[in-house]
Image (tube, rainbow, N blue to C red; front, side, top):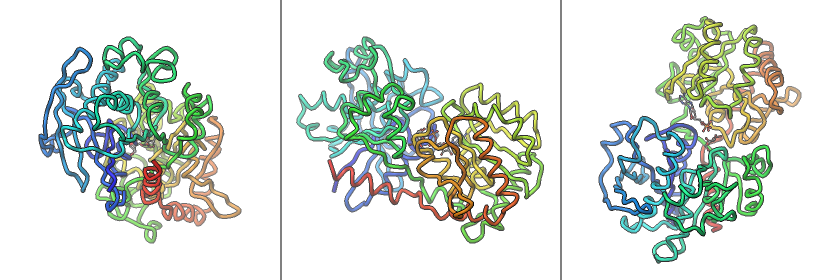
Length: 478
Ligand code: ADP
Ligand code: GLC
């Protein structure tokens, strides 16, 4: 039995700001339980819901040096759907209304989290064979592990995998402060280790010190070797190319299932979607005060509102698009600029545009189920889960051909009658608009073909079944 420990900053159902949480919370359930035992280590944030905090059980506590600081580390444990979750407790670091705040504060928080996670293992009497780290927040885990190995037999031989979910966020701060916070020797702050462009870089540390590096789609694994997507680390990605691979994300096919979803007005499946899916649309039109018309094409967006997601393109052509017979429903929070942009369009086109500027899991399910198409024109997209959720709900994705979007959405070919969505290549607003209009044309004029696109999308399998096998293979190869 191979023991795998995931260390990450978020996981469903406990805490979520984006797709990382979906991956960390669902993937562990899909390993072959006869051969793998996967546990997960997370921070215990004050902002987690009471219902979860109540279920955590105290396991142990100790005091840990973080250079000259001495910090309390509590470990709480919970079994959830067959998986052991550990929660690192420290009320000073993990307070506040959100998991992440300003960088300076987050740098120290996640240095603490990384060291505490490792330090707790001997006391828990749990020695994983492989530690699987996710994103910059856990970048120091492989670095501390390297450091711990010298003095402590327990840590020798533990291997590490590092998964990049988003290269944009790296955890960068000046070297002097990071040295002071982490207490790591000067040796680690050289340019072939944690230093990048004169600063200390957590993500770089994680990548340099891991045995294997993965990212969440094949295309993104290739893209990040190039300057445009490399976020100034493309050199490093090339240097580690022989240890770097892409494994596309899956989604939880039980949580996201139109046949059983409790959040949606009308359940449906591959056989019944033609009749039933539209009832979700009219229910949502009514709920949101949009013009109630089962025939109107409804386009959805569910997203963090950041520049990664391509909203500048939407901004540019929204007035033109709103002349068409479509409705647009947006659910998201994030940068004020984009929140206000969608509020503005909802005010300007009240029967056509709904801007839901908040976070709601049930509402996201309603949108995946109700819309005819789903728009995701990302500037870059390591994998993207929203388009997979859309495919699962028979909602046709319209995407830019980048990262995981390119790998998971097959463009419609009207001659060969193939494809599961619509896509465009360049980061260009009118190219995006042409794709949306092409989709409108098929939706209105060739409903049969449209339904076939829906059907092919619903038939695709983006559960973890396939990708979990690829992670198992990777672990085996180590
Ligand atoms: P990213 O991780 O870059 O944010 P993904 O597409 O991988 O993008 O994952 C986004 C996840 O967050 C999806 O599960 C999506 O449904 C969810 N999500 C984003 N914004 C909201 C929101 N406002 N309300 C509910 N769910 C949201
Ligand atoms: C990141 C990426 C997204 C990916 C998610 C889960 O947040 O932006 O593309 O799907 O991580 O891997």
